[in-house]
Length: 338
Image (tube, rainbow, N blue to C red):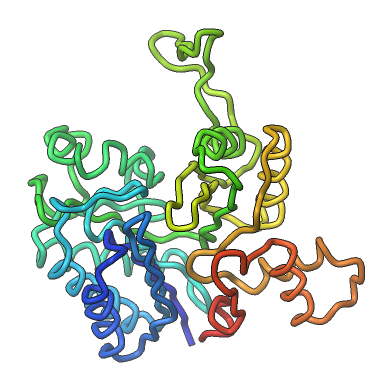
């Protein structure tokens, strides 16, 4: 059986009625299963995870987005997380017996239907991208919702689906197919976000702009000189979590085989120590593949013959995955959920 995961991110992290509407829309859809729904009030964002076959996942995504569109108004939205619309990003992810190319086709069908139905511009990213500059989500999202109306006037940013007409209520949608992304945040024991931002800049693959002794960005031919970060396939930023009175290095591990979770965690710890601050555990937003935790468990285990359940336990303990909320393997590991 083919299994595809879809992880829509909606720009609402506080309204239970909206969450209930999205949840009901998915649960009433055949051949798809809702795996998790995780709101964050500080980010003002909810990450939804579902899995199903080709027809089920397409219909589940469409129905969830219809519910979100009926309940979210971007004109009233404020939050810590970058976003371009109410239905911010809708990635399709191959899980079992399915190719990335098949997921690209599903994302294109989704884009075609939803752009026409909601009258909203849609951009294709990652493996579905039709232009090199649209492969990266951060490129498409640059300027965010507030800059979208102006961006749509630029012929270079004509949407892949839908018209280049600003929808003030919904903004725009980004969709496509990608490798299994692990949304991973490391907790910093400081309320000053400058430390988390500095750590993120040093570690993320895109790095940071070089500055002179006065803090001014150094440019050559009008372009900033970039210093690449240490971790490949990692995107990152520093954010404040007022609810817990901490800050976080918030990362997207876009290929956990290249930069595993435990490597990202240890590198953040190393940078935090350099700055004289402490790390206090971490969290995984959404679901995680079993293999990613097994590799972390092996890294921290002194006994290489340890069982699967023990390796998962070791990973949870050493990464501090229950520091903010209990990490329950049966509810967080995708293979245990399907």
